[in-house]
Length: 160
Image (cartoon, rainbow, N blue to C red; front, side):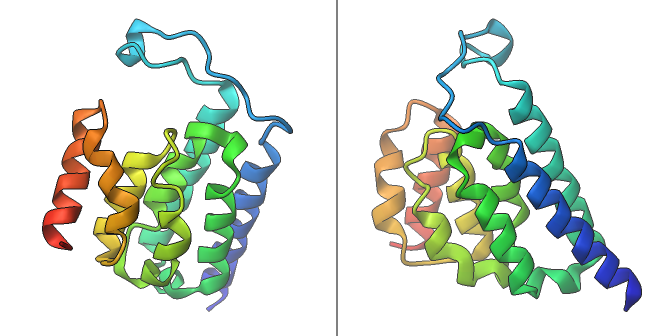
């Protein structure tokens, strides 16, 4: 039991660290780079936040009982809602990609139009097995990114 409590505290603290990285103002896109296939370069805080979310995913896989802890799910969603973290939130979206997090689907679906995490949101809704968000996913059928368009097609085929 002690280990689970320690893990929970570590996850909550890590989310707070990620939120603390957020700039006060929404940062503009950096210049594009060939390294990222013509996408804008990442800010250092995006990389740092992303790695924190990756760390949380690993913790949740080691302590699956925490996947049903609403306090943890809520705190992860607080990071997702911190839009100034931009793409650093992708790993946090992926961290809640499991069926037990389905109660979070509505709150998450509001970010299907956020260009920094749109494809990850659809992928996570699929992993949550969360029907009922066609209205949020459908616009992504027109995405310029093939993988995002394919995620949207898959979602709509599963949940017509």
